[in-house]
Structure formats: C-alpha cells, structure tokens
Image 1 (cartoon, rainbow, N blue to C red):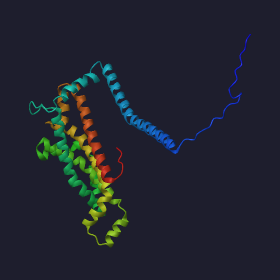
Image 2: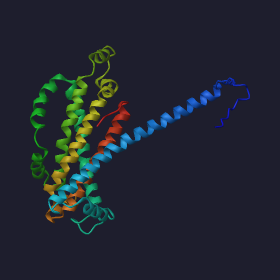
Image 3: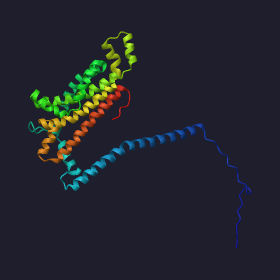
Image 4: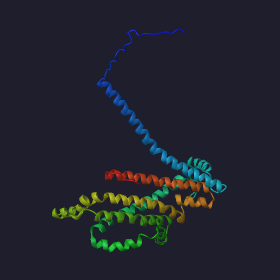
Length: 302
C-alpha cells in the first residue's frame, strides 16, 4: 500500500489573510442599493394592497352572480351574457330613435341635469338658511321642530305635491331632488356654525365687525368642512332619489330606462343600468371627496 504525503510550500504554515475594510464610497453605494431595494419592495407591497382587495371583491361579486345565474336556470343572465350585451349598448350610447328610445348616454345625462338643477337650487337655499339658523338662537329654536318633522319624510312622498303644483313630470322630479337635498346642507351648515368657538365671535364683537364680515371672515372658513359634508350627503341622496322619481314620472332618464327595460323583460339591460348608476354615483362621490380634501386641507374618507 502506497501513501502520498503532500507538504505546503510554506512548510505547513498558513499565510495570514489581510482584511481590507470597505471604503466610504463602497459603503454608501451598498447602503443606497439596499435602500432602493427596500423602496421597490415597499412600492410593490403598496401596489398589491391597493389593487388586490378590490379585484378580489369584484371576483367575489362575479362568482356569486354566476352562481345565482346557474341556480335560477338563466332567469338572471350570466356575467358573460351581460358583458356581451354591455358591449353592444356602449358601442353606441348616444343613439336616438325617438323620444322614448334613446341611448343610455342620453338617459344618464338627463338624470344628471335634473340632479344638477335640483341640487343647485337646494344649495342656494339650504346653505344660507343653515348659516342663519346656526347663527341666531331664536331662528334655530323656530326651525328645528319643522326640520325634525319634514326631514324623515320619504322624498317620493313629495313627488305628488310637485306634480300637483308644477303640472309636469320634469319640474316635479327636480322639486323632489330639491326637497331631499336641502336637509343635509341646512343641518350640517347650522351645526358647523354652532360649533364655531365663542372666542372668535367675542373678538368680532370687540372689533365691531358687521354680520357680513363675521360670516365671510370667521364663520365661512370654520364651517366649510361641515358644509362640504352636507353637500356630499345631499348629492348622494339626490342621485338615489332621481332613479326612483324617473320610474314614476317617465320621460328620458336612467330611472325611466330601467323601468322601460323591465316592461320589455330585458333583465340584461336592467343589470347594466344598475352598474351604470353605481358607477356614476361612485364618480360623483370621488369628485366631491377630492374637492373637500382640496378646500379643507385634510384627507376626507368615504
């Protein structure tokens, strides 16, 4: 048996390894690379946390919808069939084939026009009324019982009054929007005025400011967040009410479109209208949140 023994050139001694410390430039480069990697990971995490939950919720809705369609044996159209119908509808949303046969785009625009007119009139009346009611105790005690009595009344209960007074479906619908939109703006504006610190008003008295100066320089900036909250609530309520009002009054509008499609037993179009109504309401809500955030310098949550 032959064995071989190998000897190192240094006689069995290991040469010492000299450690060279990194330069400051290398340390800075490594630190910047690690920070950039962490930043990218945080951005991807925030992206998926913003995108994944809504997608999962939408997938859950579509899954339940498909399950209901299967269990009802097609009485409720499937998401696929409804999607094909939606593509056909939105390929030409602004067609006109008669006074009662118009595309979904014209119906949405007509409903938005009624909401804008009714809501605008309510803002012109409700916001100043809220300032006056909140500013003067006598008027607050005078109008609070009336507001408490009329506010819980269903907006559609006012529709026959509008038809009786205005003798027309369109002004009656606008009247219904007006009466349902005014209460949130009056109440929130009045509450905002009443919560202005008394010290501000005491300083105004010392300076002998007029009521107009007090309203424009002291009350308005302090009440603006409350007022915008009332505007948001009023717009949401108005968009809800206009659909029901148009079902009863007829004419062009998204509510009438839903009722007309029901009379034609076209369930696909009804489901599409539901998504259109929800989408328009979501856009209005988001726009008002952005406006409120811009004017109040704070994040407004929906």
